[in-house]
Length: 182
Image (cartoon, rainbow, N blue to C red; front, top):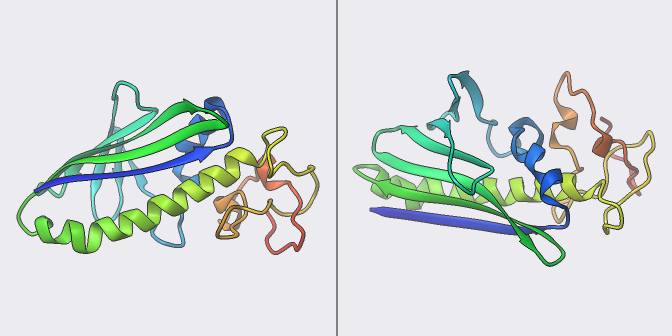
């Protein structure tokens, strides 16, 4: 069975602000939905359900190939496209599902993937626009917690609650009603 899934979001930031965010799953991954992919060495990542290998793909800022399960032969990648008002961030999954995964993909994996990707895009949008001069989310630096954080109200840095989180410039913005500290 062929699989194809695409998510896009206009991010009000230049590509050079988005690239480092895409490179750091610990910052953008919605850990409240699923654990972030764990590096295993040799450009491989364990997601719990799958093993990915990071690959080079023309036009992609980050790309992966699914190594296991064998019944899921797919690639997925992030692209940045210049657009009016910012940068279009696109994530695409394309491949084939065989055996039990013909049923698992549409019933269980794709719905979870959709929730994770939309939350991940929310996190990128919050983190990228938190420090962009002139953006709607620009906030003065200060000792308080992160800015408004997008439609679901998350603060700009999802890593802010993790033990050992070093703090980032985008974590040092003010919020009308502080709830979290970095």
